[in-house]
Length: 130
Image 1 (cartoon, rainbow, N blue to C red):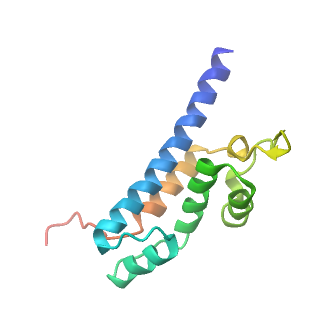
Image 2 (image 1 turned 90 degrees about the vertical axis):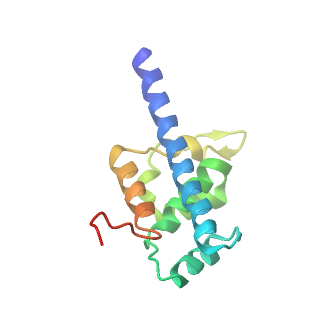
Image 3 (image 1 turned 180 degrees about the vertical axis):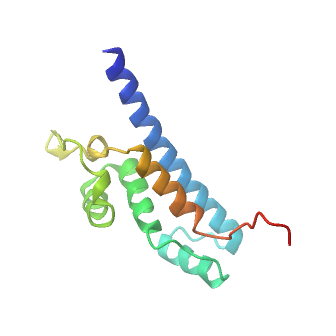
């Protein structure tokens, strides 16, 4: 039982980190662009207009974040299209609803991928002296 509790806590922590990671990008992008848009696509376009890259899979991180926050069929279906690997758990039905939050299973590799995607979406800091 103790192991199950720790695995559950680890899963919850990974999900919380993904949400925080994407929202950090979103808040940062608003600062970079001076644009308070809440529309992901328009914000990404504004970042690219500054000459900064947007990783092609950033939308998948957005979809994952929105599914974890809203736990509904709209974001569940969207995530299956953009990042099907993270939806592998049981999709139980509580009261006729799909439990999408529980269906998401994030591995260390998924977390690394999410951090790499967000890290490649915006201004790139060079570590070498200019």
